[in-house]
Image 1 (cartoon, rainbow, N blue to C red):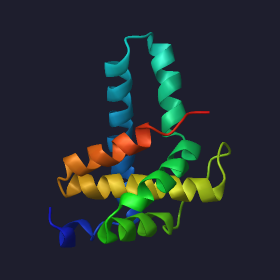
Image 2: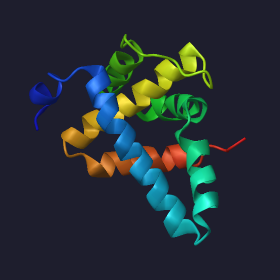
Image 3: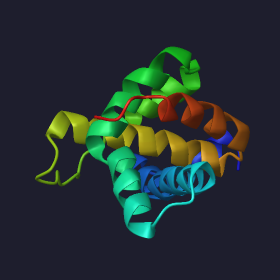
Image 4: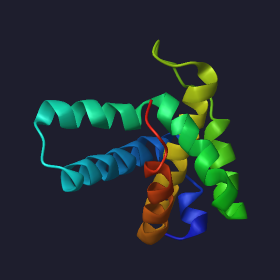
Length: 128
């Protein structure tokens, strides 16, 4: 899709797709890094897909984003209609939605290499 077509989707729709793109990358990396029981894989995945971690991802990737990508990130952050889970706070959740929005946007544009570049930066964030 071209930029005009992708921009017709709402930020929350892009985040809906981006959530699955991001989680697929997390699961793939975990499986390829170590063969471990499924329970451990799940626990490690949850640590990297939670809003708190994705909020940190927002900070990690912001300095390397293009102007266009930053606009999409901000559009996702400012999206309304989010119901914040009890495990997160509104700021973290909105920033996590922004990251997912960006991943959905890039996916629809076919920019898989860029997604991988950003994901590699995110992957290096320490887990607490």
